[in-house]
Length: 494
Image (cartoon, rainbow, N blue to C red):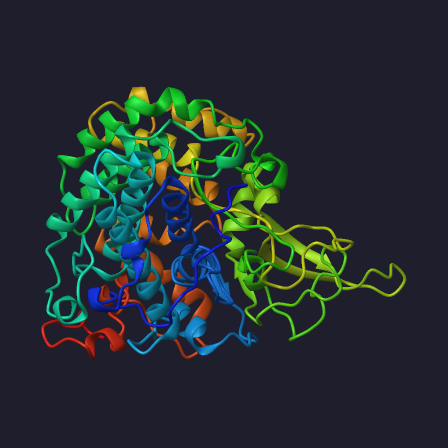
């Protein structure tokens, strides 16, 4: 596992450090320092001095939690931010939303600093990694907040707050340039001590995802499908080398950095580099284990009681889909005492959980060792297949869809896949991984709102929530950011 999460300290509020207060000029004098700097940028995605990591806050709470896969039980004791995200009541004063925005800009700030203080032609690999991470941060900002300020070098605060919200096409152009640079200057994959670091296949895989996002709502750039197809065609053979034909083996520690393309790295042991995600999968009091036959005695959760859509579980059971039991448990024993315990029926995502109640390495609820995968081969297969369908080449897309269906224990499709087939496979393949909400958005405003509204009516009609509208396809710009600027307008209806 790479050492990316071992350094760096965070700040509560992002902004861009002013040059006059920046002491980094004496840094980046040799390769060791450049490597330390890029390691610190990776660390922005981990715990980074906070209780929760980026994957928990962003991909789980602000993304999957708002989709049509997960719902909150009426007895939840979740914190206000988490309830408000799920019930479409979030405001610009949300600490979770502000934290996501700030963390992404902190990553951009650090990447800009490395790129500004090293020269083109030196430390090329680290510059390429920095440009990938900057592109990743801007991509997530665009997807979740819409237009934001584009900053590509260190800047003084008084200048930063004067920047406008840049046009999406301009930000996408910078993202594409950064990813193309990374793809041209990195090895395909890194292994050994560098396992988990970005390679050129990851850069191209993210570039393809960027094009697929541009092709959908709100840009609706149909020319982006051909660009995505071209990018994916160039890496598909390399992606195949990371494909594991057994879905149940994707989420085990022994296979980390072997079957994925880009992951956030975690490790347990009480060094503040563990994942907090398993602490949010179901409800629990402040101490004690909600499923003692799986987890060590001092494990506790955050009172979420997040459950998986019952209709989804029943559909996967009827299909005989092997991805169900690898991703979800439908209940647990509430005690290790076989004589007194009882079975608790509950559909919960457990693919991120280490089921070992004798574990002494995991020290706290936010000290889990599982990496969080952002891109894996299935992403590439299904995006590539979707691009081929959009480009009138559905027959060529069939092998990639069938490959995932076969792994799931399903029969191959009887005919060339349709977009509906892609939508169905993506829904089952990535349960809990933060893909679904963004898929719904890029497939269209009307489809997203209708799908999310139907789900909200079914599960949250009596829990003081509201039905989603067009405003909920973006998060609000944090109020603490608007307070520093007089030229930004809040996203509509917040």
